[in-house]
Length: 191
Length: 200
Image 1 (cartoon, chains in turn brown, blue):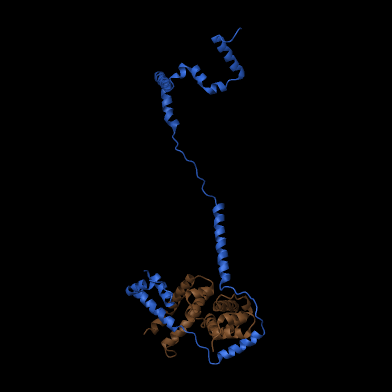
Image 2 (image 1 turned 30 degrees about the vertical axis):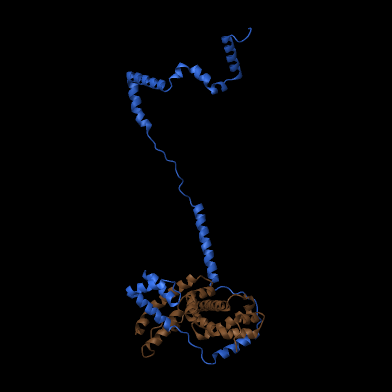
């Protein structure tokens, strides 16, 4: 069966077509959850965020301008929703009393486990996730769009509402931070 | 190419966004710079190790069921979708505007040094004092100086003394400065002198 063009699905969804919107969800759910997962840093929060993104999109689909790219609009909602969530979480964390047992769970702060627990390569993958989670939010958003979702700098810039050059600089800075943070693990995993 | 530029290009290259010709220069740099070669290897390793975990089997069916139930309770609307980080950008623009305004205000408000007219001051009094004292104490010198001064005045305006009346009559300001009575008196005197005044 031929796939319906996305523009037609979006138009139906704008008129209140729930089936058309469900099809749009199926087409984009993996990518939206991917952005949420990268921004939130854990699966449980990412699941809630992905639900929230599609709910917001459904509430706002009437304001979507046909002619513009649906995925740009949807990813924009995904980044915005994630940022609001992070802001709220940060406020709650600041209010909570300091717990010494939790301090080791801060990304990038935990002591590296021994070789008996994980191979050097798996260790590196886990460390990369932690290091990315510790990047500033605007670097992480660029990273999620460019590296995880494979968007070009220009496409990521359209989602983030900034210039292509800004995305390029953020990626460069993010990689510099990651390389500096992961230096010991990169040495270990060197063939 | 500097290492800083090369590393930025390495990042662009990984994202498939290297500008035309940038690759050639980057490779040329990498051939000679071991540190940048190691940096690229590190970034490639990070890129290769970056992968999001797949959701478990059956996850998406449950996700869609849950979402469907939530969507059924909502109607599609026209909620506005903002650009990410828009609030931060607004603050940045506002801060920049405030800084620019403050800069202009300071420029207008702060006192600036007023340019002062300076002129060369020659202490003439100090130079002339001893000359004047010497002239006053020697009458002969004073007489010679008087004669010299008189001669130089005559040299500058030789007719001044000789024909002052003629000069005055030729000067239009002389006539304009006279009152009506003075003019009438002059006219009468001239008529008498020339005999053109008519019968007395």
